[in-house]
Structure formats: structure tokens, C-alpha cells
Length: 319
Length: 287
Image (cartoon, rainbow over all chains, first blue to last red):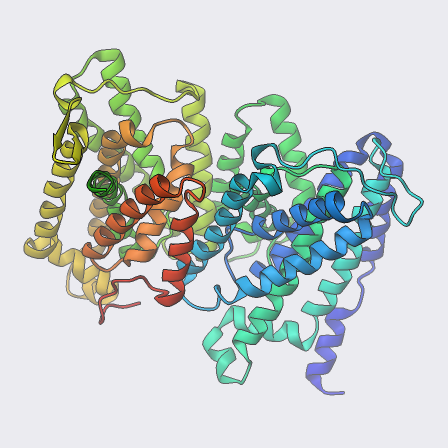
């Protein structure tokens, strides 16, 4: 086995703490039954953050409009549930495919230009969808969104109840599945070429990496995962509104990925958990002005250096 | 028809004054500053509060708005922005979004979330009709002020010593520094001046664009469009982009209200796909 193969295989190997973490995650709705709805919400955010991390952390595309795919998935799932069938599996599947197709189409817009251009194009796409969601009220319900959806039981047996337990297991399972897929992707030779593109596009091109094809592929996959997160949101809550497409959502998910650490798949999950806790605490103290503290946190985070916030063991080292 | 064109031009000129500072600082420092709107908001609130609470006349408020925002810009540049010039764009985006969030919440806390109403002086309130062209006096005033500013800016950039230093720094920082130009001072004064212009634009625009704490978020995308489409290497680019955007936005909202901002965003994406570095890029500058 060559050196390259060995190093790729090594990265794919499970660490001892990974199964422990997942068992803890899956046990959490049982241990904290009262918190199950929050666990579900956090898991949705984590799934969404996972998707952004693939784009931002592994492909190096700064996107300010990732909510486009989340919202698209959420609305697709809602429309399927309303007009076609209340089956959650169908809604999920259609939402993933639809979002991935949207991602495929949108990926061609992020291939060219500087960071600023990409920022504008991704933001523009999210704003266009938000505008469409607002104006096409015969389809999307405008500002009211789509409410009061009836969703059939998962696997024909487990009803989404008000206690959020089934919902949290549904979302956690999705998270696990997509996490494993992403883990496989980023540790494959394909993932290695992505990192090469992120670090130096010209050099990657020079050693024969098909840069554009790689970016299109990862953007499509990430969009599909974001769509899954959106669908999970709709299916477990029974409604969808314009908030799913809003700029705040794009900014929040970016913040989560950054808190957890970009270019590290667990970063999204960790970031989502930390962000939800911060948000919960802050909005209890100052319900109206917690945004200020989030802003302050961001500013300090950047000035201190974001890559070592949640890795205290690197604080002592030199940058 | 002509009225729409007129309103579009007034809107575009206003956007230009608001965004030109952003264009220059972005070209100069390659810094993605999403918080530019916060300076505009500062100017707007300075004007509104001075007029409401201290009865300062409108024309006196405008220079004060400029000075206030410029001072704020200078302080922020020196303390917060400077360490970030060499950081990756992601850091800059996060940092400036953080600033926007703080500005929005702080204004909400101290002044309240309601829309501010501006009392224009009498002589700006009327409306003149020439044939089928209806011109609001205030919009005429905006166009006049902005046109003067544009000429002045162009003069400063093209003819003065500071202008040539600035252009040299935009083209190539290292060489400019090597030629004995104090690039840090150029950065600082440009940032302050750009923020001041944004503040002036915010003051002028408070009546037209509306002023409430979410102002920096609402208009962030418009400033960025002006900069991204216009390019950052000259001021004619952003000027034309701002006029285009202003006219497209007013006309779009008038003729096809159903689609609203949709047209503007789609136009932006198409333009950026076609010319990723902006419509009006001067050759020869350092990318």
C-alpha cells in the first residue's frame, strides 16, 4: 500500500470518542425528555451546519446564502406534504433531490470570481428565493408560510408527537447518516483534492485536479444535505415560513460552523450545540437584544482568532 | 415615464454617495466590509435626532452627519479594522456582520425600533411639474448635492496629491509604500472619508429610504451590489452601477410590483456571471 493510501485510510479510521459521542447524542432525548424539541432543533441546525462546512471548510467557498437550500428543501417538503402525500419519506426524498438540483444549477455561479463575487452571488440566490417565497403567495402562502401540515407516521408506525421524541430521533438518524456520508467524502481521494483546491486553486489545477468539476460536485452534495435539514424542519414542525430562507439563518449557520471550527466535520455539530445554548441563555436574559451579544461575540471571536476557540489545548501554542 | 427615470436617478445618486466609500476602501484594502451601512445609519440618526430634539436646521445637520460618521469611521479603523486587513475574507465577513448585529441592537436599545420620521424644511417639500415630468424638490436637492459630491470626488482623485497617493496605493500597496507613501495614513483618511460620505448619504436618504435600526441589514445588499457590479478600481464604475441599480429598482417596483426586488437580484447575478470582477474594471491594476 502506498504512502498516500495509508494516510487516507488512517484519517478514515474511527477515533475512540466518536461512537461515545454518537451514543450520547442518541441517548439525549431519553435522558432529557423535556428537552426533546430543542434537541431536535439543534440536530436540524447541526445537519445544516454540516452541509455548510462541506462548502466552506472543505471547498473554501464563502457563502452568505446557504439558507437558500435549507429553505428550498423546507418548502419542497411542505408542498409535497400538502399536495401529493403526507408520507414523510417521500417528502424528504423529493426535498433532497430538488435541493441538490438547485445546488447543481447554482454551483455554476460560484466557480468564477473573487470571494466578494461569490458572496454576492450566494446572497443573491437566497434573496431571490426569499422574494419568490414572499410574492408567490398562491404557492407558498406569502408571509404566512404553509401551516398546519399533517405528516404521516415515520415508517408507518412512529407518529411525530408533541413531545418531540420521535422528531428528535428522526433528525438524529438523518444527521448520523449524512455525517457518515460526509465523513466518507472528505476522507476519500476526492476529499483530498477538495482540500487542495481550498488551499491553492492554481496549484491544484496545475497537478491536474479538475477544479470546476470538483466544486460542482461538492456544492451539489452540500445543497442536498441542506435540503434534508430543511425537510426535517418542515416534517417535524408541521409548518414552514419565510424565516427558513432568511438572511439571519444563513448568518447563524455560518456562525455555528465557525464556532465549532471550519474544516472539521464535528465542528458543525459542536457549533450548533454551543450556539443553541448561548442563544437560549442570552434570550432568557435579554429577549430583545441578544443579537447584540451575538455580534459582540463574533467580533471578539475574530479578533482573538477563531480557529482555536473550542480547542483550548491549542491556546498556548503560537499561531 | 420621465418621472420614474428622475426618481431612479435620484435614488441611484443617493446609493452612489452611500456606497462609494465602500468601493474605495474595498479596492484599497481588499477588505469585505459588510458594516458600511452602520455608518450610514449613524449619519441618519445624527441628523434625525439633532433635528427632532435640538431643532438644528437641516442644512447644518448634513455636515454634522458627515463629521460624526467620519469620526466614528476613523476610530473604528484605527482600533478594530486595522488588525484584520491581512486576515482571510471569512474573518472579515464574520467580523463586520458582528458589527452590524451590534449596531442594530444598540440603536434599537437606545432609540427604539420604530421608523424615524424626518421633518424636511418647507423649501424642500414642494413638487414641480414640467410637462409630464414631476420632480420632487427634495429629490432635486439630492441629485444636486450628489452631483456636486461626485465632481468633487473625481477632482480629488484625479488632480490632487492625495488622490494620486490613493490611486497608487489602490494599484499596488507595496510599491506605493516603497515610494515613500504612508499607506497607513492613506488607509485611515480614506476609511474615515468613506464613512463620512456614508453618513451624509444616510442623512440625505433618511426621508427617501426610511430609517430604522435594521437599516444596515436592509441596504447591505444594495451597497454590495454597487461595489460588486461597479468594480472597485474607479469611481465612475460604482457611479454607473448605482444609477443602473437605482433606475432598475424604481422602474421594476413601479411596472412589475409583483416581482419587486427580484429583477435587481437576477440582474446582479447575471452581470456577475458575465463579468465576475464587475462591469467597469480598469486594466492594469493589481487584482
